[in-house]
Each structure stands twice: as structure tokens, then as C-alpha cells.
Length: 467
Image 1 (cartoon, helix red, strand yellow):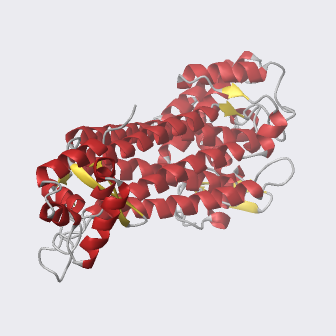
Image 2 (tube, rainbow, N blue to C red; image 1 turned 180 degrees about the vertical axis):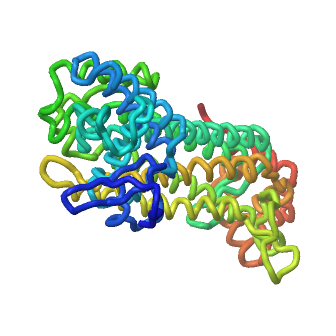
């Protein structure tokens, strides 16, 4: 780590002296974490909600500790003010430990503790690094350990991050429903196994997309609610050793006041410390959401294929050139991005599942990679779903003529004709049409069995849903 030749302070640990610039708020533990564990170039300070959640937990702890007489009023006030400033984003640049640090979260927790302590030192007219008024371990980290405050911050941050993401999924569902209403009367060829199947309307297709997307949002909301159960107060392994009697009730009351969310302690603190299954469930819902939307996106890629050599039943908004060599080519870039997001979120989910399994005995020390991958999935979906809605779904147009033509030239209308003409007669005509390389409607008209208008009317009637 590069430090200036002058204007620096010295801090020591059992490995020796470390020289730190006087104008920074981190300390020796942060420096060790940077030196030993920088692998991804993504710092904890780059995840705003995670740092805000950490600040909230430290803030609540300081208030609880003061009420229980283990930190004095001046220390509490300084810690709380430092936490408020940290929560507001003032010191993200000092949150320098790598998100994928391998200390089980200790380096991250100490980075937070040191920045809060050093800012509190300044607020109490003392110097950073001296720790004569507020110490990172003795005061900021009082009644906590990395093992309970790190996963508590993970959950608090994930709970906050999911809210705008879920709102985007709800908005996408509404956009699909708008298209379902817009396309309600457009006949469409339903396909199964990539083959012509039965008549339906394009509105019914988009109505299915809307129902799925709304259900995805609902399941994500349920998963989000599970994040309100925290391990805070369990300290190192679940016994609560190191926290004064009455601390847990007070820290949760203060956390609720600070965040506006009714966070709650786990029924069994040992379970809360040992296991990350809540995160695997949240991650699984994110994967389900991403891959389900990826399926819809794949449908749109097929239905908009062409414009001359494909289905061309839908026209997606043209947002950018599709080729550097083929003039005029437009690609379905938004649906393709959604498909890619499905791949990425699935990979993240595998990582979270493996980390959950790899926990050992009283804690899971792979929480950092779980946090990193979970937040990545949330961010990918939040941004991707918004762009998908704004730049693709809201601007989709239907090619009504192509939809009707593909349906009426297919054998799918045969199903609609069976109640009128009988299965055997329709089946024979289907075979006759295939042998003569004609579509079924041509055969019906040749035999004066059904006009084009009558065929359309029967087909439209077959799309009615029995409610």
C-alpha cells in the first residue's frame, strides 16, 4: 500500500507497524485486509446498501450499549453521528476491503469499525488512530462479533435492495397486461413442440406472460420477508456471550426505529449463526425470476424473427443497429440481454448454494461471496427488467396480418372445425391438403364447405376460455 513519506500515523498489530496517512479514517485491520485479500477489485464501499446496513447495525448497537451502561453518552453520541454520516455515503471511499475477502467478513467488519471509530475520534476532538476516546473493538464493536453483525447487515441490505427490484417486476407484469389488452382480438397460432397446435389470441399469449410475471413478483416478496429474521445479538456462535443482559431486545427496537422495518431475532440463535439457507431461498427465487423472464424473452426473439425470413408476428422496437457489416439489420437486443441475465443469475445461484453447503460447524465463513453474488443478481434483474419494459415490451407492435395468415394457413384451424364437420372428415381434408400442397382453408373453400369468413368466425370462437 502506498503511503506518503510525511503526514502519516503509525498503527501496529501483532505483525508489526503499519504507516497510515493521517487524513484517512481506516486503520491497521483495513490495511491488512487490503494487502492480503484484494482479489476482485470490488470493494465493500461499492455496495452502498451494504455499507448503509452496517452503519444501521452499529448505530442500533451503540444506542443499546449506552442504555445498558457499557458505553458512555459522549461515546454513544459520537458513534451514532459517525454512523449517520456513513449511512449517508460520506465515507464509502474508506470502505476499501475487497468484497470477496477470505476472512469470513472480519476484515470488512473491522473496516467499518475503524472508520466509525476514527470519525468518532474526530467528533470528540481527538486524533484518528489514537483510539483514546472511541476504540474500534471496545466501543464500536461492543456486544457484537463479525459472526452476527456481518450476516445481519447482509440481510438488511438485501431486504432494501429487493424492494425496487420487485417493483420493477410488478411494473413489467403491468406492461405485459397492457399488451394483452391491446392484442386481445388478434388471432394467433399457438404452437407446441415448435409445431402448429391450436388457435388462440395474441392477447392470451401476453396474458400468460403477465400472470407469470406477477407471480414471480409475489414469490420474491415472500422471500424478501424472510430476510427480516436476523442473527444480530448472537455474537460469536449464538450464545450471546459478550453482550450484556437485555441487549438483544434493545438493539432490535432501535434497529426498527432506524430502518422503519420490523426486523426480528431468530427463534434459535444457533441456527441463525450456522446456516445461510435463507439466502439460498432468496437466490433461488431470483434465479426462477431470471430464467422465467428469459423464457419469455426467447419467445419474443422467435416471434419477431425475420422480418422476411422468419415469423415476423411481432415487431420489437428498433433501439440500435444490429450489425457492423449488414446494413439495416436490427437485432432483438433487449430480449437477448434478458436471456444472458438468466445465465448469469443461474451461475450466481449455484455459487450461493455451494457456499451454503460449505459452512462448517457454528458459522458459515463464506458469507462474503454469498453477499457479492446475491447483490449482483438483484442488480442485474433490477436494471435488466427496467430496460426490458421501457425499451422493448412497452413498444411492441403486432403484425395482425401475419398472425392471422399463419393461423389460417396452418392445420391448427382443424381443431376448431371438428365440432362442425366431425373429426374423420376434417382429418381426411388435412391429409388431402398436405398431399396437394395446399393449406386446409383452400381445401375447405374448394369443396364449398366453409368460407374464409366462416373459418375465421369458428376459429375465433375456439379461443374463448371457459371460465
